[in-house]
Length: 360
Ligand code: PHE
Image (cartoon, rainbow, N blue to C red; front, side, top):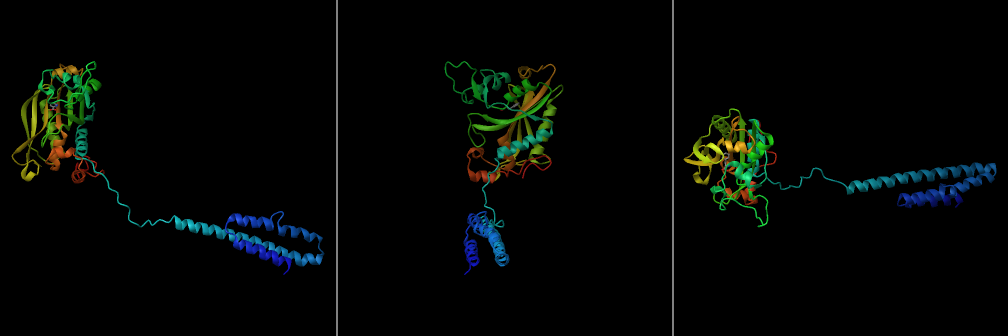
C-alpha cells in the first residue's frame, strides 16, 4: 500500500467515524491544516523531479479534494441529523383537542350591576364611589338622620371597634349607598346625575335579607327636577332592566329622613312553585326607596336648596337579580357554592350592553 492510499484510508475512515463537528475539525486540521499531513506532502513536491511531480502531485491533489469533499458532506449530514432529532423532540400535534380548563362565572350581582350601570349610563348618569367603612357624618348626620334615629341603633348598624382613647369620628360599615350622595355633591356640585353601586351592611338575615348586600344609589339634581322625573326614570329603568314593555310598580308613601316627600316602590311578582317571577302574581316585592332630596341634605352637600332640587333613590341590586333571574333565596348569593355559581353565573363574554341585549 503506498503512502497516499494509507493517508486516504486514515482520513476518509476518520471522517466516516467522526461523531460531531469538533471531531471533523480535528481531522481537517490534521490533514489539511497548515501543518497537516497532506499540506506537508504538498510542500515535498518541490523537491521532486518533474515526472514524479506529475503523477504524485496529481494524485495528492485528488486526495486533498476527496478529503475536503468528505468533510463537507459529513458536516452537512451531522447538521441534518441534529435538526431531525430536534424536530422529532419538539414535535407537537396541533390537531389534538385542547385541554379543557374550568372557567369561573360572573356572579349574578356583578352581572346585574353592569346591567344597571349600562341602563343609567344611557340616561346620562355617571358612576360615583364611596368607602364601605364610612364615618357617621356621611352615613347619618349629613343625610339628616338624627342621633336618636332607630337606624343608628346597635341592632341595625355595624360599628367599627374604637378604643376609649380614640378621638377620631366613629366609623360604621355603611348601612346604605346614600352617603355617596353627599360625597358626589361635595365633589362635583350641581347640576349632577350620578349613580353609585356598592356593598352595604345591616344586621339582618332571612330569605330576602343578608347582613351584606348591594344597593345602587341614584341622584339627579337640577333647577326643576321633580317627582315626575323620578317616576319616569324608575319606569324606564324597570322596563329596560326586565326587558319588558310594561312592569307594574307600586309607589307607597313612605318616610326617609333624607327625602321629602318619600316613596317606597314595590314590583309585582309571584313566588309560585318556589319560582320567583316578575310582572305576574299577587305578591309585591319592595325594590327601592326614593324621594325628593331633603333641603338639609342638599345643604350638607354644599348645594343651595333655594336654587336646586333633586330626586334620589336606592335600589337593592340583589333583589333585582333575584327577580330577573328567578333566584328564590338571597342567602345563597353569598355561600360561594360552586354548583350555585355555575348554575346562576354568567359567562365573562356576556357583557351587558343596551344595544346587544342586557342578559344572555
Ligand atoms: N337609603 C335608603 C335605604 O337604604 C334608600 C333611599 C335612597 C331612599 C335614596 C330614598 C332616597 O333604604
